[in-house]
Image (tube, rainbow, N blue to C red; front, side, top):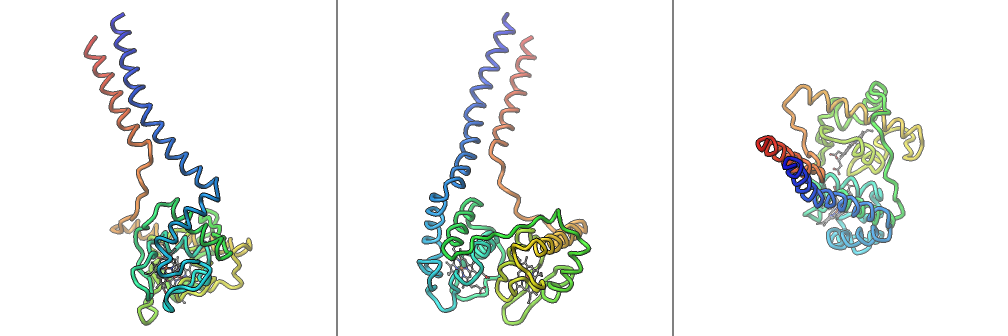
Length: 265
Ligand code: HEC
Ligand code: HEC
């Protein structure tokens, strides 16, 4: 009788402690789902971020002129894909009105904010396409051949990158994701030509998508090979998933309650 009551008390305490944690986690997921399902809200959010962080250089209207002759108008740089790439890789917002903006860094925005910003600019300039890519569907050997023909002259066969003259560099492929590859090929940032030198590249053609998958698979293989050789840190781990902390605390409490029950018998 006593043991049963203690057991129920223990379960009640656990339930109380776990409820706020789990409802907090699902609340977070709900916010994201809402933002993506309501495109009006997404556009408004993207516009707000644009006006605050980008307009001072790129002009109040992404589809209009920029504020400085040394800053490109966003109508000319490759739409949503260019914004997604430049902001995700931490190149934008920039601190200077003259390029090249070559340093890769940590993004200043959350994934959801980047999504809103690229959706807003993409719609404003009439190019919302973020290219499709799946390195898992690529063939490394074909990718290596294509990369050798189209990309190696600038980025090096091992992906080490190279200096292109002036302050321009073709950056390393180390730490580059499949999406970075696809977006760079579609938009041709800086001195890189749109299409990256792939013959007859067209971002929505299945033949081009396959070629991009092949190259992405080769770039992923380069990254893996370097990591296996050791010494290169994997940067940018994602945020701690919501709910994970709650579970650790919850499980810890469970262990404590079980131990407490154990000592009572
Ligand atoms: C202080 C000025 C400044 C601010 C603020 C700024 N940019 Fe830029 N942006 C530049 C300059 C300069 C370039 C040209 C860089 C180059 O030539 O490499 C550029 C280029 C770009 C490009 C083209 C990248 C490429 O290499 O093709 C994109 C896309 C872009 N900016 C998006 C943004 C977005 C989105 C924001 C706001 C989050 C932003 N920028 C804020 C100055 C700025
Ligand atoms: C003419 C030289 C040139 C060629 C050819 C070229 N690139 Fe680039 N690439 C560049 C330059 C320069 C940049 C950096 C632009 C910037 O930062 O504004 C770049 C950027 C990139 C990035 C972004 C890296 C990062 O740090 O985010 C990727 C990925 C990339 N290139 C892949 C490729 C692939 C794949 C090919 C072949 C299909 C290719 N490039 C062909 C010059 C080149």
